[in-house]
Image 1 (spheres, rainbow, N blue to C red):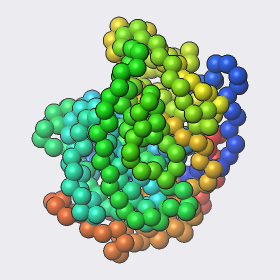
Image 2 (cartoon, rainbow, N blue to C red):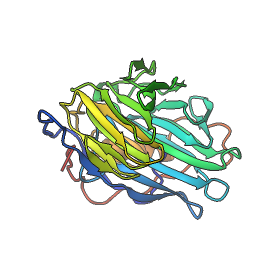
Image 3 (cartoon, rainbow, N blue to C red):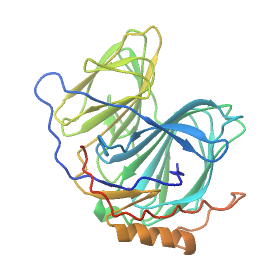
Length: 325
């Protein structure tokens, strides 16, 4: 998904120390989302939990938008061709359907329970449009920062349909990494975890996890407790490195759906602006110039409309920002 804000915040992220988890119950930091409109008069409102001033990354996960459920016949998704550099995009739907086209020549549909992962690397362009089949649109769009040695890698696209697994009173779909005895075959450039976990009413579940990972649990529906800390819908609970297990509990009378993200701390500093991830302001400037006037990103075939223009660059210098405040 694009960041279509006309005045995107310029962020410098990464490479600051975080405290680990003490023995016993891990400390959970609760992150609230801010609402961002995507698009014009029929803007799709999204709830953004990453990046923010309190925390900019969880592992290599650097961007998390959570949207819906919305009536797609009134407020659909129409994002014209736009660029990406230095990152991978992860599309995951709970309901609806989105048509994806990119400059690699990919024409694919994003459907519930199916992972679409696109690698921008040196540069890719794509469009996203909800289809007539999408009466209700509901899902998450996530970005993964590429490490420096791979940030100029070739563009790529992967599709995977994970098989859900029952664990206690929960259903787990692992779309990246390893959890609950399942491993995703999708290639990433840093170790990552991404999974949808739906808890039955009254269920409590402890999942073994890699203690070298930090984790974030995003709540979609239901009132969930993460390691005893309550989380409301659209909140993200952050757990630092050191935990060998995460305990999730659903005390409500309805199912609770969550997204679990994880990875080892991303030790590099990155600059995020609009749809670009780079290491310097000069790289951002060059990427913008290439999008507005060059052939670096390729052409998206089959989209009926003009590409998305890049917003104006900020006039102020970059503001250093670490992984956490």
